[in-house]
Length: 164
Image (cartoon, rainbow, N blue to C red; front, side):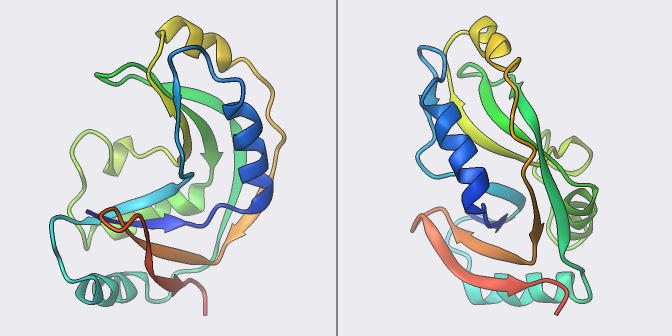
């Protein structure tokens, strides 16, 4: 699986790591913080082909403004997913644009897409909901690149510039 991810700035990573240090019992912290904009490839797809398709889909796209919007949860078969909400109409538009070139993943993309950084998974749903009442520093940043991320190798394989 490949995805197009927005890089996480140091200020956002600091907020996330501070919150992860106090996740509710049973909630397993995510080791790698990511902001997925769109999942783009299954299996052993050639990343050069995916990068070319993504560059074409992103042609003319501008850099995107983003802002941390608080802590939230999603329901999941393995318990709640605790995350930092990212407020960004720009990233939502970019996601919809990418959905025209890459099929949306059912139930989590297209109209259901919510920009976020996962903090942890699992644990008690009630504890996760209480955790969401925390205040979060309103960090703002510009997303000027997307990283084509390889889930298999757990690292980016290329960077794609926006607005250049």
